[in-house]
Image (spheres, rainbow, N blue to C red):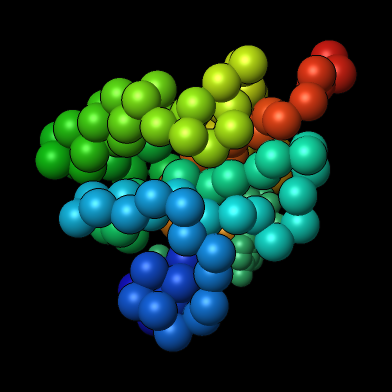
Length: 111
Ligand code: AMP
Ligand code: ZN
């Protein structure tokens, strides 16, 4: 997708610190961390919203969560973490390519 910052990161056109990658997803460090550890888990297929997701993408997102559960300890999130998906304007979504925030590395406050 043109002008999508996450598609450019996936394509290697914008540098990122990658912590996990396979054929379906990447996990990178958020450039403006909101917690001691802040990762973004990004499906390689471009779509912006859960409401736009097709069946194949839903399967990818399902596997994304399975993988997050498995790799969390390797990411330093073994003591627990928060999962956030911002959706649309009111949800505060600034990058319109679906992504899952993983926040942890410390005791998080209420939100
Ligand atoms: P959201 O507000 O849910 O759309 O989240 C977008 C996130 O992407 C924010 O937390 C940004 O800090 C992060 N971000 C933006 N550009 C980059 C980048 N080049 N590398 C890593 N994270 C980024
Ligand atoms: Zn994209």
